[in-house]
Length: 121
Image (tube, rainbow, N blue to C red; front, side, top):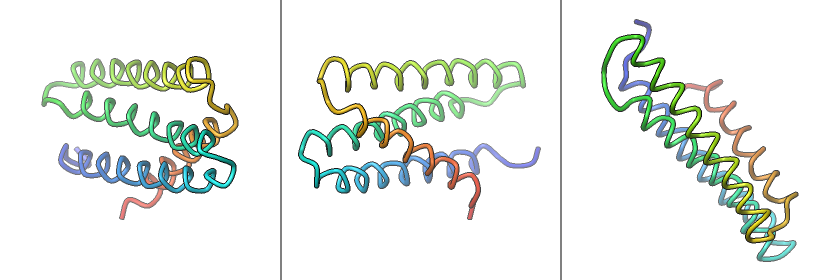
């Protein structure tokens, strides 16, 4: 085994915190366009953070064999994408917030995701 569950939990927590910071920053950046734009951008990034938090909670919930780990990974990924797609539908469909800001927040949160795995610190 190359790394422990504790190492994965720490990385997931660090990723979550950086994505929430990115949500605040992108929300502040879009605040120049107005309150609705800022909320849409922050919510777009926050749903990615929420999806990753649910994935990591599901993935690191218990110790088991490889089959159980794969099952938890797959169910966590499905849960993550349900949250992200459902969140985007709610942001753009139900609340009628600007789609450009929501998608920009989503992209920024995924950019943080890539950077977090590149620099494990």
